[in-house]
Amino acid sequence: MASRLLSRLWSSAAATGQARNLSMSSTMFATPRRLEGQVALVTGASRGIGRGIALQLGEAGATVYITGRKPTESLSSTNNDVPSLEKTAKDIRDRGGEAIHVYCDHSNDQEVKELFERISNENGQTLDILVNNAFSGITSIERAAGKKFFECDPLMWDDINNVGLRNAYICATYAAKMMVPRRSGLIVNISSAGGLQYFFNVAYGVGKCAMDRMAADMAIDLKNLGVTCVSLWPGMAKTELGIQMVKAGVLPKATGMKQSLLEKSIMKGETPEFAGRAVVALASDRYVNKKSGRILITADLANEYGFKDIDGSKPMNMRNVNGALEFFGWPTLAGYVPDFVKVPLWALHFGSYKFDDRVSNLK
Image 1 (cartoon, rainbow, N blue to C red):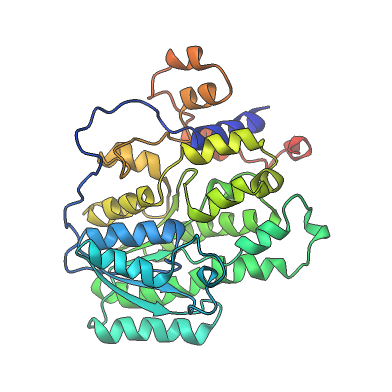
Image 2 (spheres, rainbow, N blue to C red):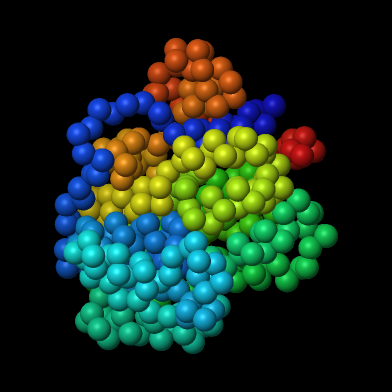
């Protein structure tokens, strides 16, 4: 019961944007250039969360290296509705930032090694921020929608976790080699609540759970060395592919959620740049090392640091109880529950089903 409730709270609150008027005269929240002089790398920045983070880091003054596949290999070559790596770089520059786009196949260890050598050579062995966002499993998730793991090609594991997990470890290792001698740096693993409860498929959930554990264990090795490693959970984000997958009916198959709920989710979700503002806030915090090893939720960080989404809204925290009530059809009751009433973090932790028999009730 508790596990199912937490799962519902996650899906609903992540889906329900906080539709409260914030009475703003301007629709844009100007980000001061707090990261002037810093060097950042965002892997997988052609579109989605990676693109949103890169845009915000550039706007905040950082020199941003962004990676993606070559144009002929990129999804944008066959899908005109998604942006390209070149477009991300142009948009960063149009906002007054500095962007260096590097074609890198993150499944190729040599290309990854050369990427970090280039950053080191061009910046005096300096890298201040690494965002591990590269992920190559979207197509496999679409193909596996509605299927059990034994009904899929077992090599789907590599499609999802070679770039999405293994590469993140390699990138973090190279980044730490540059950060530790300077006793300064921030490593952010982009993960999701799929690491807590079953979501999409087995390979996806294991990969996200491992990303969270990687941040926790790396933080132990990095303790007292000045380098911070965290795992970041965005809420439901209005990414280009996410919107397409909802419209095409792929996500209902992949998640088991109703089409109407997913449509409500995606339209009231975070913009990809909301996660970007979270990363900028972390990188600007001189005491960020106190958060090392932790899973951080974008909406929690917004409450802590006082930022909003780029449209001036304050997206719903996936832990908000009133959001869950509103989402499941009790708006009147939701109105009586204040925003500060949240599912405790310890409850999220114990909402996992790894130590009891609730797994039989999941699906």
